Structures are given as C-alpha cells and as structure tokens.
Image (tube, rainbow, N blue to C red):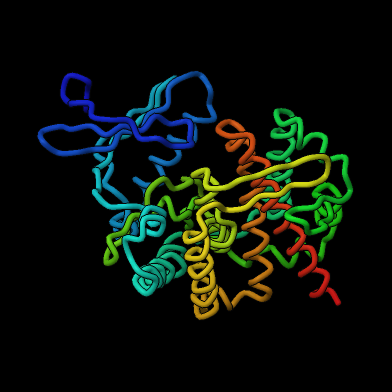
Amino acid sequence: MITKDEYFYLADFIGNSFAKVSLICKNKKLFVCKEVKGDSSLGTDKLRKQVEWIINLSPRVKKFFPEIVDHKFEKNLVSYTMEFLKLPTLREVIINSYMDLPEIVLIFNKICNFIFKDFFESKKSKVRPHYIRDEHLKKMNSRLESTIKENDFLKKLMKQKEVYVNGRKLINYPQIYKKLINDKAFIKTLTPKRLGCIHGDLTFNNILSDGKNFYFIDPRGEGQDDIFYDVGKLLQSSNGKYDLIEKGLFKADYSHNSINFKITQKENETLYNLIDAELWKIFESNKNITETKDWRLKALFFETSMFISLLPFRQRVNPVSTIVCYGVGLNLLNEVYQEWLKLKQ
C-alpha cells in the first residue's frame, strides 16, 4: 500500500464526482490517487465498482486504461492509485485547439472502432428484464424528481404543460414521460438484442489522447449495457455541448415557462458542431451501430437520458447549469418523441 509517509502530495484535481482526486509522487514517479471518505454509500460504492471493473477487464482491453497499482476497500474509505499519464483530455484538446479537425476526427475513428467492436464484445450478456423501463426511463425520472426537490425553478416548471427553450415551444417533460413509459411499442423498439461491455461515462473529458494513442479514465464501472449508452455519452459532449456547459461557458436567463441560454465561446461551439457532424458520419459507417434498426432514435434517447440523469450532480455544483441542462434535455426529449411519432406512422 502507498501510505502518507511514502509519497509526496503535489496537488488536487478538480472534478464533479464524490471522489477526491490528487496527484502524488513516489520514487520520482507520478500517480493519481482517488479516494472517497464517509458513511455515504453513493460515493464509496461507485468508486469500489470502478476499481473492480477495471481490474477484471481482459488484458487486451485493460491496456487502454491507466494501470491501477494500489487500492484499498474499508468501511468508510475506498481509494485507488493509478499511473499518471501526461496526456490532455479530448475536451482540453478541442477547447485549446491542440489538434486540427482532421486529427480530431482521425482519433475519434480509432476510438469508435475500438469501443463499438473489441471493447463492447469483450463481455456480452443477455438483456435484463424490463431493461429500458427500469434502468433508463425510471432512473431518468427518479433523478429529475430528486433534483426538483432542491431546485425551486424546476419544481414550479413541472406544473407547466409547455416550455419555451431558446424560443422554441416544447411539450414539457411530465407529459412526454407519461406517454413513453406506457408505450410498449416504444420500449420494445429501444430494447437491445444483447448487452456488452461499455465505458459508461464516455464523455470527451474521460478520454486522454496525444493524437496517436488514446486511453480511458473514470468508467462507470457497472456490468454490461446497450452499445448506445456510450454513443449517447459521446453525443452528450458533441451534440449537447455538455463540455462547454460544465465549464461555465454560457449565459442563461429563465422565468415562468421559459429557459434561454447561449454558449459564449462561439469558436468552441462551431468546432463542437463540426465534430458532432463527423461523429454522426462515423456512427453511420460503423456496422456495429447501423445493424440496429432505428439506431438514430436510440442514440437520441440515450443522449436525452444522460442530460436528465445528470441533473442532481449539476445541482450540487451549479444550479443555473442544472436549468440549462434541463433545457437541453427537454429539447432532446421532444426530438425523441417526434421521431417516434414519425416511425409509428
């Protein structure tokens, strides 16, 4: 075990999880240490699952994650130490223009070819009963319910049947959710034939790259899931612009049944739009994605689920960004609903 006497503390990293993340030095080598303390199982259980999941990966997949050199599981403390890779995240690469668009597209091609084939197929399982209803629709709804208890504006907004987001008239969440949760055909359409190994939090900020190599950090660390879960996470960054929202690069105002926001860094927004267009092309050319009927509907649904499900985590950090993320999620939910109505015709 690496103890306090054996290493030099260097700095804390800033993150949005329950874990404290620190950079440490031992024997002139750098490591990243993640730990969660306290009697709340939410943070400790999540970190424990993350550690166990990485440790149990097959060797051909595990090499794309920083090596875990030490871990500790105690009643009120879970921690692990991994090698420090001096590489920027793809979010840093894009926002700081470390690569041009062709280089970025090339690395995304490599990532998607690996994630949607070798990675996904490394662990496969049957679809669990009521998978879409219980693990995604109900989860999304419970996350929203927990958020509105803390956010007065969203609590009042739920009483509105219609909401205007950036001037666009939308059907509010409760009305669409009631229709979809009870639509057996919708649930059947979204239910995959199989589940496989996924990262579970595949945002641009959890991918490290120098343009040639890539590594993954901070996986969700839970069993098998739909391949479109990771598709939705990538779209959360590119299409939903979550990276820019999380960094506070937006302005917003809201009142009654209206939410208005805009990204303040237009160059970054333009680049993200270009990357989003290229990602859709990559998805379209990947047979592991397109072999699924109505794959675009599934991709949009999972991106929608991501935005609504992350609301309680944004609420802890920035209540205004919570409202913006709800606006993005509601816009996506309306797209899902309208797309579904077209497919039913």
